[in-house]
Length: 89
Image (cartoon, rainbow, N blue to C red; front, side, top):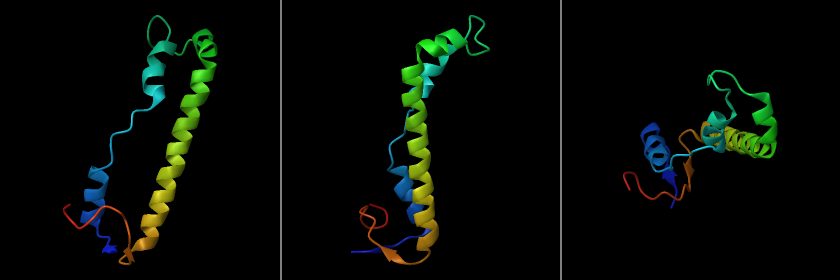
C-alpha cells in the first residue's frame, strides 16, 4: 500500500540506509608521500587499477544519489510505494 512521503518519513527512511564506506577511504593513505601531505605519483601509478575502481564506485554512488534526489523532488505529497512499511516502522 502506498504511503505519503513527508520530510519526517524521508529522514526515517534515510536512517535505515546502511553507512557507505568507499574504497578510496582506505586507499588514499597508501598513496601519500613520506610526510603524509602529498600524493606520491609513483605510488598512485602502482595502484592505478584500484584507483580506477574507487573512482567508478564514487561516480556510481553520485549517480544513484542524483536519481534518488530527482525522484524525491518529483514526489511531493503524492502516494508512492516505497517498500519501507508504515511510518515509524
